[in-house]
Length: 91
Image (tube, rainbow, N blue to C red):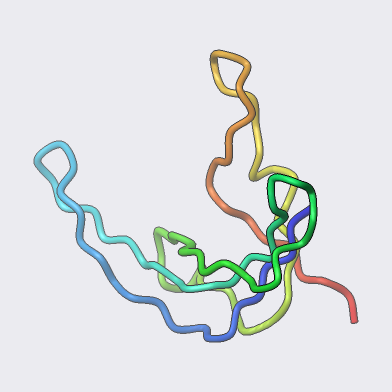
């Protein structure tokens, strides 16, 4: 799976209007080690944002792997990234 580094356990609160209500989300910065279209590891990690519904769900600083349950086939059979879930790495 994809290696992801969290360098800071802080999250930024964001308010988003949704169906007449305001949703409060918590965005956390992380870095993903992605491959190029040629299948080679990019020379630098890519900044990503992980969205949490509660501040207590923010990931602590550490190295993780993208959890398999983050990926699913949508209604058209296309591979899709859903809510990001991370599993800590060992060691």
